[in-house]
Image 1 (cartoon, helix red, strand yellow):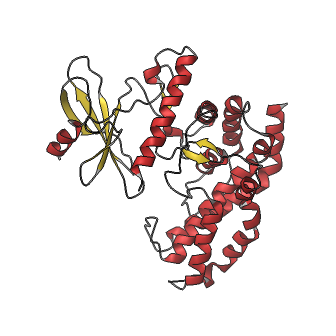
Image 2: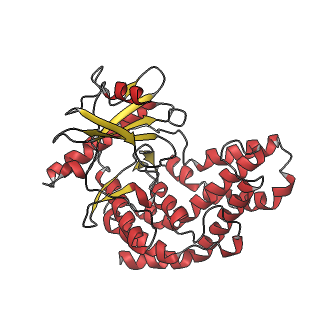
Image 3: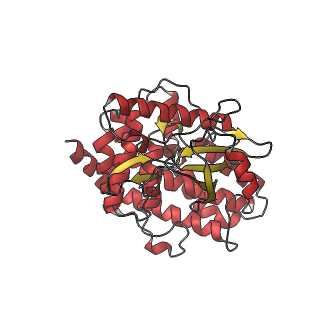
Length: 362
């Protein structure tokens, strides 16, 4: 492996001589390594891109390069200092100048390591407010990007597509599980028209697609030693989407008081303290570009993502657990019920959410 890694980095224009290459972090999708260099040269991050998930690596890296270049120009125009720590910098390969390298089997990329930068795992009101501010600002900087970005994972957050997958699974019923899940299927179907309204509004020309992060976890931000936000990271899912993707997906995980597969369904509850903190941060940086329709539908976004995940977990359960890893036979069914209970809690809190948003915009 050491020989392979050393061979790969030779295809990138790195400054300085490589001292060592060691594993970095515990990411679940890409394999990541820290490349230490000698002397005053910067260190680098080397990643093997999971091309089984990101099947069009050229689109993936074109999206990322367009976005990071645009943000860099915005920071330069604003007279920001220390820009190399406030936006990711990718290194071209020395073969054809692309921002990735294909070795015949795997795709690799290199970015400059940001020193004295940290991520945090804890979801609390403080970190949630920071996340809302950071991801809202990320969207705001990209509102005027003049580039034809494409979906790095087609139909990733397309609710109509996810429901079609469910309907196909129900029709096939390969494991004979549809009868036992009919009550929750009926509940999901009752909400199907409401939950697919984003796609309809888009087709009617009423709802825009914007460049979104689409993976708004709290640990996808970097902070300096003083706790100031430096930049948003993990840009693989950056693509055109509705702003609901960034807003709703954070709340689905961050505002669930239990893990998404906790079987103690009665204790699943939507955490309004997390909602308020994230929404306050998000609106502070995003309200300048959001349309009234987007703002009006923020509570819908909070409901959309537990609904979407319930549909995806149930689809996998009906299909025989072929997508998500499971630890026991009913794992996906437990996940489905957990997310549906979270959806019900969001629905119960919707009037309070609308009131809070109105107050913040008054």
